Length: 321
Image (cartoon, rainbow, N blue to C red):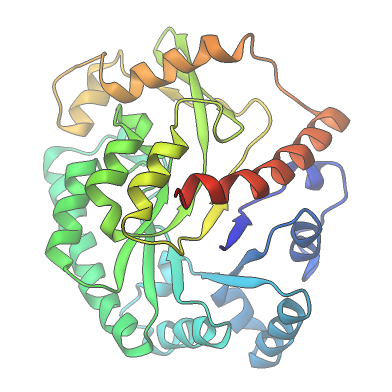
């Protein structure tokens, strides 16, 4: 099973990890027990194919699997077919059967509120991108996984993927992101699991806030997200699902502004403060006790501890007997 991590922020804060140093993240991740890392395709292409080959040798030497990522500006630009083809060539070079990306910025939908018209435009745009990039996926036999990046609601995503209807266009499922719309991650896995190609394993709990709910990140498996139930649902479709931990430590605490009418208008929904995802967030808080940010040496030790634990725990959750 492929198990990786998105970031090691406390290692970086402690000066142990320099993201600008080629291969540094992979070496530390490997030391923590991860067997999978991500690379950004267009960044390597800027350095040339010698850099691509060198990085492949480094990953092979550490026995690491690679998941190739690409920014939407590079992957979906119809005026740059050579760049798009190059990105898929990089994926093939690293034997990455999945190419990961995202379309919209997190929180964009309600921070810069989408009107009903804009929402339909964004849905049409996603369908068009999906059909176009699926042609490349079919040609190179590489599947494209787009993150649910707090942009589309569950039924909107179902509409998009049913319309594109391609085995090469699917979802990078962030297990916590639909909570921001009050949606149940387990129901997401049940209804859209057949399109899930990869994951960001993330968890959170919620605290009452004057504007709605303040979201606090936590160790996956200790908050609102029922990873075992998600694992049971997703394992029905894919027994080789990459599990990529997205674990934040610190006081980055986004607020779901569900007490504001503009939030509900941007989602095209009637106000419903008791949606399942909101209840899950608030119910998880008492189980965790008082919140305090973890920083410095304590934060580094906690990051190391959590990473090592999850490397051992996640396989059983996502490959149930």
